[in-house]
Length: 349
Image (cartoon, rainbow, N blue to C red):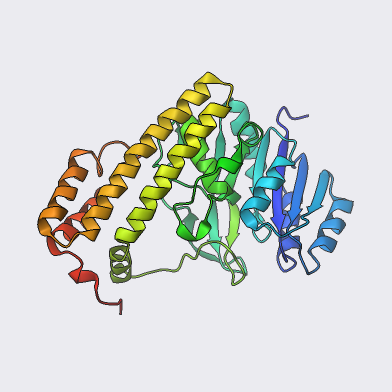
């Protein structure tokens, strides 16, 4: 018997096309899950039939819950995770395929490093027929152990590659989640929430191996990863301007509030202090984006110069890994300082 109880939290919505392949990949795990907990968001196809058939043959417990009202993927994942019994909860999308080593590597890492918050894998980016598109995903993520606030403030790891210590699910109130730094998201979805909390507490471990065939198809609700030319990427970056940075400043402010409220709710004083420290870092990030908003909103060279100088002096580009934006941001902002918005008025060809 294992010393670690592992739950898999899967959400489904009209998933009949690819669901069987994903379920079969759970059966093929070298270390089987102790339970599969499914939250179905009122599917209208044969998804429930497929899940019931799987439950009848699975060598582990399968719990299927149908929502009374449609929740959307983020709330559905959070509700499903709360129904899990395991010490660790691995999130599972309905349309990917897990590689056989995923859970055995989660278990080994949890046993070798007690006290972790998140255990993360990488993926193989594939088309809908599971033909490999290119490389691994996410690209250039770092690897190994990361302590508190050692990732950028708006760092996120995709939920389908995430295993979460259940203390983060059971002991924290996810209703206080801040607004997302991606404007269409509204409130932070589950993966951004757990990434923020894990970064605040530390104990993040990235396993630099692929554990999932990440299927991209027309019906997916997550990101697109189309190749873009250098010119397209440059012009696209240029169009991220004052309105975007104003929103990012508001998102950072919302993170400050969420972390301060979370600190008030936890009993453990060490965790509370870590949440407050992370809130202070987000306050610095808020100031950084407010300065960028000024840099991109002012037409006067003198006013832009003041904002750019303040960003340099406050380590807005180089220094603190949480709130320093890096050399690419420095190059973009310096160009903005010199020429204003003129070079980005054309469309990519």
